[in-house]
Length: 165
Image 1 (cartoon, rainbow, N blue to C red):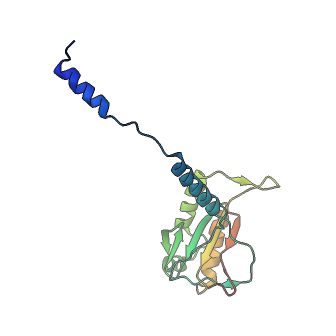
Image 2 (image 1 turned 60 degrees about the vertical axis):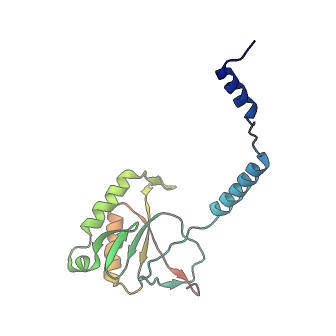
């Protein structure tokens, strides 16, 4: 029986096909490297990185900070998780202890995150205040008062270990 032109083309095409194979050795090497990379990075400690304009006070503390919400205070601005909230000059010009813009932002973020309860059943939220060592104490006091009023009862102050610059 004579083959049609189409059948001849299909026959030639099927003879030229090459069966693809997968090299599992290379894939296993890639997954092993990925696994080691992830294991190493998961065990690393959380480090706060202040901005270049900020100089943190020194301390002989031995504990590393936990990862939590960060409130940074430099000489010009108050930043919450890297976003500018209010200027330092406007806060120092106010007479009241609470900072309204910061209170509003903290309450908004608190409404989005669940509350952690301590051993006594009291609700508490955590925040780290990373302030330049040259900011006035009055400003730091107002910031901590505002955090307390917004139900952030566990306030940590970020410092540098002595000899770690």
